[in-house]
Length: 406
Image (cartoon, rainbow, N blue to C red; front, side):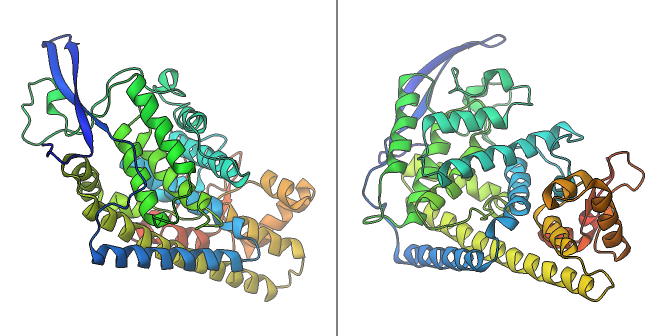
């Protein structure tokens, strides 16, 4: 599979299968990233330029909002659902949007919402001016896996060999390592050094030689190829795309949702990553990556504009009613920022009494601005149907946008 100009080396690994016995194979160790621009075609530079323009438009739109952080949670929950689906953990997007983060009803939703928690920690880390580090990445992986069967092996670099995927032409009765599409570096010094080299590279200023979109593509490839953890590498690697663009000053507010585009093209996504390792094919990978960033930025910006439109429309409904309290408008803002919430949440966020919060929620339910997910639940949760419709509109229709009581 690996051509002579492959950007890495193959090393021999050995192990033992409890049924099949001793085995020997090769693992791939990528060379550290350098300062030179990969060989790219002119058309790819145009795609990269389009991606930068889309990111600039997204950032400009976010900066023009009275409160850019208002839309962070709903867009982050969308990203959490898609990036987890790429790794085999799936829940309907509407269920993710309205789930109780404190008491998620299923293990899948718990794992997805732990991604939201980890991502917010990472965004706060970068916003404080701290660079991405190995310690940050291991913390994120531990947070991501804390409620999974892999929890005991998480929060640190893997100490064993992993393999990725399965080749279609592989012998189904053969050794798992022989059936793999790709075998990343073995654990130990090479893996530790490779990850440290990567975070050092991400901290450096490459703007004089590399466009930030190209640099983000390069660092994403390197992380996924190193595959430093037992699990969660894909999710952390895609989160690092946004972290890098945020740290590079391309994004002021990390509202970009990259995973829905990659999820819809997962076969090509994995092929493009593998093509760099096997044949040094940076150009098709960078072009694919940049096109994904462009479309993701365009779609995120469209969602942002649509949510602001819904926010204004809901406030118009209130202005057309007999309800005049400023707190009603603040509750609309809360409903946009939090796809579902309780009366206690309203009480805390608006700084009003529980009775006042309960009455206010009831008034907006009467106006059909809000609805209860399950009116008979002990801990009632509410949502704004028009907000949920915007957030789930890319998933194939309104049927999924109906929340289910769980």
